[in-house]
Every structure is written in structure tokens, then in C-alpha cells.
Amino acid sequence: MENKAVIEIKELYKSFGAVEVLKDFNLNLFEGENLVLMGKSGSGKSVMIKCLVGLMDFDRGSIKVLGKDISKMKQNELDEIRTDIGFLFQGSALYDSMTVRENLEFPLRRHRKNSERKTEELVKEALENVGLQQTIDLMPAELSGGMQRRIALARALILKPKIIIYDEPTTGLDPITAKEIILLMMNIQKKYATSSIIITHDVDCARVISNRMILLLDGKNYAEGTFNELAASGDPKIKAFFK
Ligand SMILES: Nc1ncnc2c1ncn2[C@@H]1O[C@H](COP(=O)(O)OP(=O)(O)OP(=O)(O)O)[C@@H](O)[C@H]1O
Image 1 (cartoon, rainbow, N blue to C red):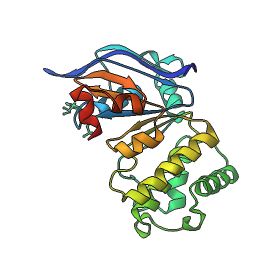
Image 2 (tube, rainbow, N blue to C red):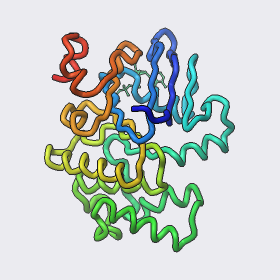
Image 3 (tube, helix red, strand yellow):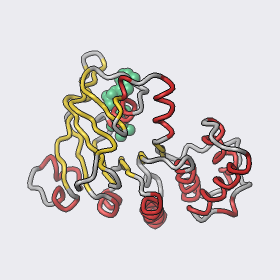
């Protein structure tokens, strides 16, 4: 892909005491692509994401988001760049005590971007995108796991982010619901031309959604390539990711 990079991570190092979590980790996310990041539990995926959005300091290396250096940003610049990045967290992480509408309004209010009317419009558009307009006044507990995940996806998209980070988007869902979520992610990507990092252990999900993959192992980007390239590898360490 010849597009420009919207995220550039170069030679990133991060240790906790004697534990070196990231050691020369590199990642480029190009405009419009779906990049799948795979790594074992504890390999440092969450640490990398926290460094990326300025929630955690790193020891060495550089991170640029939309062309700007994260480590040189002031708080207000960090706040602004975070509105350009949407998150779908592990599980759904909806607020249990809020209705669907209130869950969706939350990011809009926090960033004070919109008038009341605009807020209403954006909530409705977000629900339409995931086909759940009828749930607007329900509580999360009244929805199935798959519906909760779709609402969480709608919330991740409501600020129209340029970049979306999906953390285990299909974990805990049955295969059919997982497929529905993947299709929805792909449709929404197309509609809004977002660029995405998808963290997943789900080989089926990676096969369907990835334009490119990075395998995180021993703190590094151990291997990179398309799903087919990596899945055909003879390297036992790479093969282990596809079991
Ligand atoms: N704040 C912290 N203080 C000390 N160690 C930490 C801290 N945050 C993460 N770690 C360590 O860094 C390593 C990587 O953790 P991380 O949460 O990034 O893994 P992960 O790849 O996201 O795992 P999972 O797939 O289970 O979510 C782990 O060994 C963890 O114990």
C-alpha cells in the first residue's frame, strides 16, 4: 500500500523494572488499511496502545499520530488527537447505569463538540450504522452480548475518528455474531474511510478483515505481511499464531 502513514511507531522501547516489554517495536498504519496486530497474552499490546495515545511514557523511540510527535504534545494537543482515535475495548465496556442514548452521548459531551440538536442527530446516525435504532432507550443489560458490542462500536465511531483501535472485537461472541461484527466493522470502515488497528487472537477475524498483519513477539514486530503470506510461513514461531 502506497498510502501515507497515519501512525508511525519507530524503535519503541518500554520496560517495567527488569522486565523489557517492548524492545525495538515498529509499526506503520497506512491510511485506509485494516492492520491486524497479533501477540500472545502479556506480549505488550496494551502497553503499546497506552504509549500510542500518550497515557504511558516510553523509554526510547518515537511515535507519530497523524504526522505529530506524541511525546512533544501538550495536554490540550493530546486531548485533541484522542478525538481522532476511536476505541472498541475488550468486552463492550458500556456504562451499565446509562441508557444506550446516554452511552452514545457520553463522548460527545466530554468533547463538547456539539449542540443538543447535533447530538441527537449523531446518536441516531450512529445507531443506524449498527442497525439498532430501536434500542435507544434501553439499558445495556437488556441487550444481548452481540448487540452490546454493536452499541460499543457505534460509540467508538460517534466522534467520526480517523483511526479506530479494536481490542479483541470478537472475543466472547459466538461465531455467527462474531461474523456479523466483522462485517459491520468492514462496512463502517468503507463508509467513513477510517484506518484501523485490530488486536485479535481470532484467526478467522484476521483472515477476513486484515489487509496486513504484524506479529508481536519478544517485544518486536517479529513478522509482517498479508494473512496468506504469514499463514504459509514455515517458521514455527509464526505458525504458532495460526493454530
Ligand atoms: N503499569 C504496569 N506496571 C508494571 N508492569 C506492567 C504495567 N502494565 C503492563 N505491565 C506488564 O507488561 C507486560 C505486557 O502487558 P500488556 O497488558 O501490554 O499485555 P497484552 O499483550 O495487552 O496482553 P492481553 O492480550 O492479555 O491483554 C505484562 O508483563 C504486564 O505485566
